[in-house]
Image 1 (cartoon, helix red, strand yellow):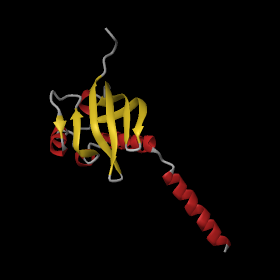
Image 2 (cartoon, rainbow, N blue to C red):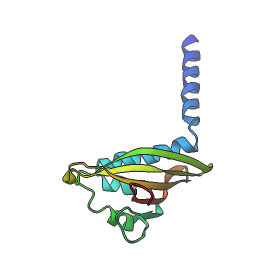
Image 3 (cartoon, rainbow, N blue to C red):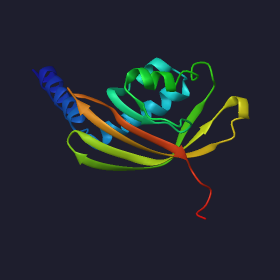
Image 4 (tube, helix red, strand yellow):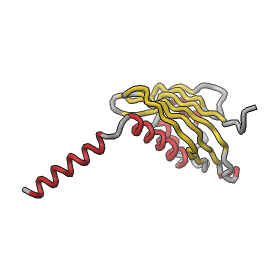
Length: 148
């Protein structure tokens, strides 16, 4: 009986921990996966983080990439590139139970450029659809050194 009580307490504790994650934590986990997947140069996994109808305003693109195939095309040079990304500063705004805005600064680096950081800024709208959190909108642009 004592073993049963301990097992029951453990299952409640584990369930409470998983259920305790709110929209901000869930959205930040998606953003963290984006950074890790980009840095692993895994284009397919990266594209899988975006909603099928997501919009990407990429750091180096003069156009809007909309939908899975256009986002896949935007990241076509990522595999094997040695590109890395690291978040420097982040803010999170919960818009509702199914939408969170993450924004901040991150640095891109390329092995071909001796990993010199390229400061950029980002905004990601993370949405929950059918129980899954994904990127619905992503804007990234170079960060200016100072206000002029």
